[in-house]
Image (cartoon, rainbow, N blue to C red):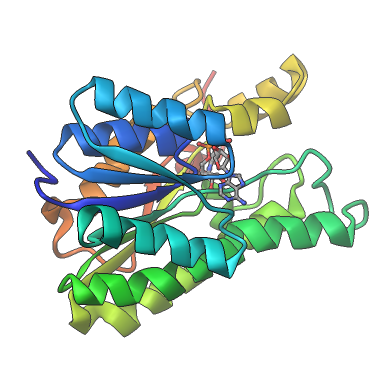
Length: 257
Ligand code: NAD
């Protein structure tokens, strides 16, 4: 097993990439702290993990709140004695996030609070625990929009993910000698609730799909596989990277018919 005797905190574990990662990491031997604000979804993830023979607990944690991030880390150490893997994955894409002119300051702040401050707070409380465990792996979910402009404007989301990517590089450099690796997972457009709710008409979906060389949205499970690689010792010489798993979208200039 690739994560035998490891303990992972996974934020946004109630749904999408987070849930699939909880299931896959547990299957590979990790004990999981599922952190989210969706209590029903979180409990469902825990049930799915335990039904498959794994170990998991749910903790309600709004990643934009310091006390909640502290609690999710304490939960890992209290329930499972240590923290080895911190997957800062929770994020939102608000339907009213548009271009610079139309986007309100309120949407800007809410998006940055969860997507960017949330990663900072996860690290603020997670890094001391990783040090106590003798090192570990941090994975921060950024996005392909951190490296290219999105065809559908979403200024706050794009800015937040750019921040996640830049912060990941600095974290990686600063903590490299502490045996803590920090990498960003940059998914392409996925068939998860987050994007499907945002691209809520066929026309909007098509506008995004046309840019993806593979001609389809990615699946949350495919991101979990990538996160597993970043969490495991198989990526032992990788830190500070932007790990693009995007169906080729960032390589495309025009997509063939
Ligand atoms: P999702 O909506 O299925 O899951 C996101 C989870 O985060 C939900 O369970 C939600 O309840 C939780 N969450 C929201 N606000 C929170 C908060 N304040 N504190 C704790 N948890 C909170 O979406 P997903 O596609 O699985 O997204 C996961 C990550 O992947 C996000 O960071 C997202 O920005 C990123 N991402 C998604 C796509 C895509 O196309 N879906 C592409 C690139 C990056």
